[in-house]
Structures are given as C-alpha cells and as structure tokens.
Image (cartoon, rainbow, N blue to C red):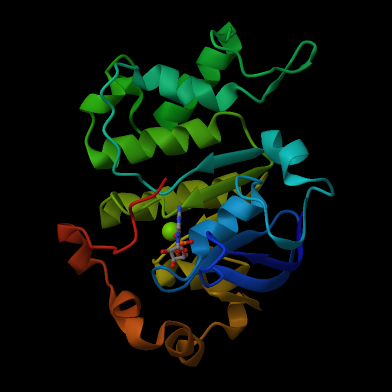
Length: 263
Ligand code: ADP
Ligand code: MG
C-alpha cells in the first residue's frame, strides 16, 4: 500500500532533514501507528506519504502509484492547527469537503469553486458526523466550535469518503480519555475494511490495536507491535520520556505539545 525508498525531506536548503533516508513498506489492511518525539518528523512523514510534500530524494508509491494520483483513496485529518476560522462555514460544509475526491457518475470529480454535492454525499457526511457524535452540530459555524468538536468534525471529514486508507495526525489531542477509548474502538471497526495510519502519543493503544509501529525520530524504523517494548520506547524518546509517561489522568488538562503550530 505504501512504499518509500530512500526518502529524505528538508524544509529549507540549509536545514537539517526533517526525515532522513526513509525506506519503509506498509502492506494493505494494516493498522499502523506512527510514534516519536515532538519535532521528530511524524507529520512530515505523513504529508510525504499523502503527496502534500515532495521528497528531495527518493521515491514514494501509494497504492502502486504516485501519491498525487492515489490521494483520493485517502481520508486525511491534519494535526489540529491553531488557525482562526473567521469566515463562516458550516460544520456540514467542512465535512462535505471530504467527499471532493469521491468518484461521481463520470469519474473522479474535480475540485471546483462551487462543488455540487449529491444527496448521497450529504447522507455520508451526516453519517460520519454521527459516528463522531457531532451530528447535532451540522448547521453550526465551524469557527464557533471548541477544539475537541473541531477535531471530531475533521475526523468525520476524513471518514466520509469511506477511504481505503484513513490517515489521522494526532486525532485524540483534544478528545478526553473516555471518548478517546471509544474513538479507538471506532477505528478498530473501520480497520476491518480500511487501512489506518495514525500519529499518536497514546502508546497504550499501540499494543492493543495496532499491527505495526513506525518510530520516527528523523530516521524511521518500522516494528511489529510484538517488538514494541519499554526499551524501544526509551531509545526512541530519550530525553522526551515525558510523553511516554503521559497517562490518561494528565490529559484532563490537555497536554502541551511544542510543535503544534502547523496544519
Ligand atoms: P512531529 O510531527 O513529529 O512533531 P514535524 O514533522 O512537524 O514533527 O517536524 C519535523 C521537523 O521539521 C521539526 O524540526 C520542525 O520544526 C520542522 N518543520 C515542520 N514543519 C515545518 C515547516 N512548515 N517549515 C519549516 N520547518 C518545519
Ligand atoms: Mg506533528
């Protein structure tokens, strides 16, 4: 499903590579978790896989083709951005944007300024909002929602195309622990039909649901979940063990990530 060969990416000509020389294969159907310290390159890796960034070296294949060609098979929810939504757009419209790439009667629809959505599009969008328990917010303005509600809507947007691959960047950051657990159960259900790729600091989840763990700290290694033990975790995070110790209680106050200022 995903194949990277010797991929490196730097954000600027003089900056350290955000990810270096990544060679990685992820088969179809897997539930894969991407873990690593803040700034380690997790979001960068995800954006490369989705074709949102182009590697300076190496090659990436997604479903056997370039990421650009296969992107419509992927539902993606970016890491929560600290963005002000000052223009009025409804929750339903934000969610419907996830239906852009879904093939219509005559092949994939193109992005248009005024996209035309069908009744089925609306039904799928509402069903996805319902799965994320925010269907009652459909008519509200997206900008008026709390962080947690926005995150649920962005996940619904990623879900509503029934993608072959669901890619979520830190989806539970603004969701409280009890709901996060329910959310992971939902993902397990989705994984019966689709592949799932999530960036997550919830290392407890890793052992329960996940087939493999991709460890990202500039360099990238993939491990089957059975290999993922305490030693590996401390090597990976070294100074950043705070994240490993992160338990459910501390997230009542929300935990602070230092490199969230992105989308
Ligand atoms: P993670 O998601 O693991 O926290 P990122 O992929 O966001 O890590 O970032 C990896 C590195 O690339 C960090 O050093 C970060 O500061 C840098 N970086 C991320 N996004 C940008 C950007 N848009 N411009 C410049 N540097 C960036
Ligand atoms: Mg990130």
